[in-house]
Image 1 (spheres, rainbow, N blue to C red):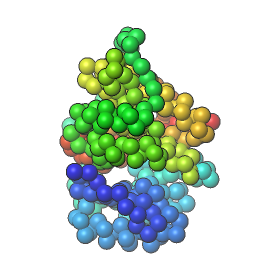
Image 2: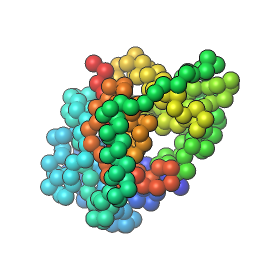
Image 3: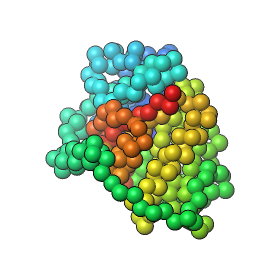
Image 4: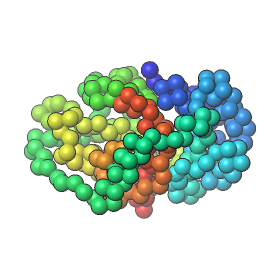
Length: 278
C-alpha cells in the first residue's frame, strides 16, 4: 500500500492511509489561500490525523493563522530565492506527541551527529558506483523491496522506477561483482532548481562502510553539473547513520517533522537537512 499523488487545483498533493496524512508538496500560487479549505475537506473525508505543507515563506502567514505550526525551514529553496517552510496541522493532538522512546533516540542521534562519531571501513575494490539506467530498474526494485517493509512511494515497482527516471529522478547505485548493494536518488524540481536527496538503501552486509556518503557525493556532483543550487533531504530522525552522513557532508539541520512518514513499518519523525552548493 502506497500513498496517492494527485493534483488539487494546480497544486501537487500526496495523501493516504499509510502515513495517515496529507502532504502539500507543491503549492501553486493560483490555489492560495483557497487550498487550505480543500485540504481540510480532504482530511475530514479520509480521517487523516496530520496535514504537512511545504510552502513559500510569503504564503506561510495564512497557514499559521489557520492552526499550522512551523516544523522546518529551507532557505532559498525556490528559484526566486524564497524560503520553503514546512508547516504542520494536527487534526489529532496525539499525533503531535513523540513517544518517550523515540524522543530519547532522536536526542541520542542528535548528540552523536554533533560529535560526528563514526569510523570508516575499507571498501572492496570491486565496488562500482554509477548512474543507473532503465536496465537497472529490476535490480533497484529488488533492493528496495528487501530493505523497506513500507514506503510512501512504490519504489519496489519496476515501472514506477522507469517512469521517474524518465521524468525527474536520477538514481545512483553501487554494485559489487554484479550485485546492486546500495542505491539512492536525486528527485529534481527543474522549475525551482532544487533536488531532494532520497531513497537511500544499503544491504545489511554492506552497512557501516559509508556507502551512503559515496552515493550522496555522486548525486551532489550530478546536481552541481546540472545547476541545482539547493539540495535537501527528509531523513528518519532516529537513524544515526543517515543523519551522520548528511552532517559530515556539510548539510544543516533545519527542523523535525513530527510523526510524519510511514517507513520501514511504522510512522516515524523525520529530520529536514539542506545544503547550498553555491
